[in-house]
Image 1 (cartoon, rainbow, N blue to C red):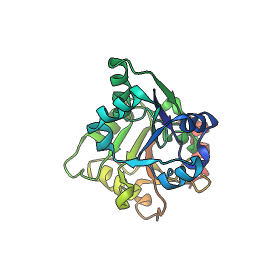
Image 2: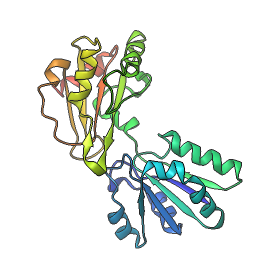
Image 3: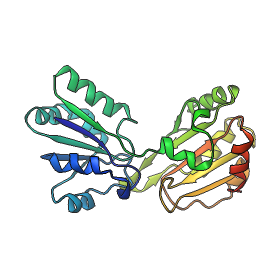
Image 4: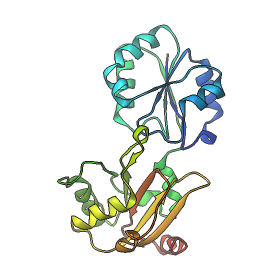
Length: 239
């Protein structure tokens, strides 16, 4: 059986259901692509068994290896946040179906719900956009913003990161990108380490955010659309 296990945003988020599944597995692979909260060595100590950190490319290119294992024994693929936020993991489940391999999904706390800490209503978020490292000539994230704003919806920007090399797209990088592509100087919400006790949320006009010093990662940026008065009141507390 293949277990696809979400670990949440930090180790304290790991559920009893996730712990039970991990202890049952003979092999455990940690998708380290976007994982800042989960550490393979620490997880190994917690579980008393080896947890192998792997790059996203391994899960994509060595999928057959993992699935062949899952035919014979219980194998766990561990993912920071929720386990179904990336298409790579959905593809794993599709292959399981095709090969008649049983699987179980164990969900975890995700940034997609943690953004509710800002007071912005989750129902009012539109399409999510990602801002990658290579973005000089990239227009898609800004086009998504324009589309969402035309509908009065909020936009969550997920910012690229490479934890192994300590490289991150920052809130300042994201705001600068959006302003250069034509966004007006409007209220934006910069968030660091959401879902943890060290979370930082700042809501200012875009050009003011450029002057803020956001030290902690991971980071994300929200550009609110049309806000209910309760959302506006809540955001006032972050200015």
